Length: 457
View 1 (cartoon, rainbow, N blue to C red):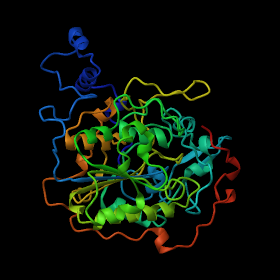
View 2: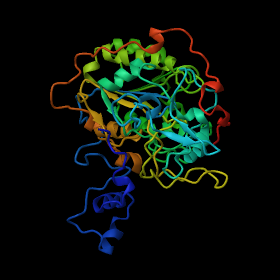
View 3: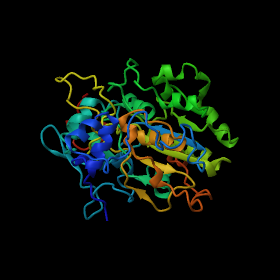
């Protein structure tokens, strides 16, 4: 039975307890107390920037010694339904009696474009779009019916488990998170800023204007302050490069991704590791062949699985944003990280703020401690990784967003014998099974091809 797509408390009025916790973090608890909306018995521990997960323990205390290494493999530009909608596990496409997706979006003329199996693992160039404007048009007031008009008919395309055998097996084996949302309905850079800083600091695009930086810094500086090691493996652009102030004294932590397999095999991974694909060839952004990204990810994940520190590792495989591809679950409301508004001008830009998540993305939590046969319906976004790091080392939150994020622990069983201490066998990636080049997609192979228009945003 499929899980209902109704969203829980963040799209409902805040509970009294949640309101008080948020108010305390914003420094308005006294006003609430004076107004009679709270009393001492109901007052909860404050949650907010600068507050440790466990205020009774010193900052830097390791509270999760079972996990020694955290690896984040964040790929590019695909929605949950686009990759995992036909998986048969988690909240994928609603299907008709013939097992076909029911999903459809109207084109500019009002004609429905139904979800369809992509004719190739290659992608169109520049379509669809995940930019701020296109994402908000696609969302269309949480109706999720504007994907085609925002990014072209190709936005309704999807791939199957047969197209991506390694990813599909990974999602069927470990903990599939079917409520992992992008942190903001916008492009790569703002979402990767949320990953390390809990805020995008006003940014909504992929421009290299790196000012302003995050007001409370990044998780990297918190790790450095306590001698907790981190490393960013990269091919072209390191994610940490979005924060030059945070890495100016840590450039030795930026290493080429070719070294990752050797470090994993030697048990030499850092405590926190970010692995970036080559954003030109293996990130899975259009117009790339997605099989190349899957093959890259398989090498990284297999290196972790077969390394001597597997028994002490947690790996998160996820995507920075949806890439403009359709997803049927409306993004719910989120807690704004701070009082910095997005740098938009309305009009011509679409209105919005940092108080709503982006669309769902594929995400799997991989660890020997992963719960067996578990699909997590817990709401996550990229700041959940921050919250896990903060929980493990009792580090203070950077923003309201990561302070209130769920911390991944519901996906793990740290009390019993690890379910996946014995390494599960996963199939080879698609490209390794069939190295032939994929056929470029042409407009004629896409339904309602005449409705394809340049990406907006």
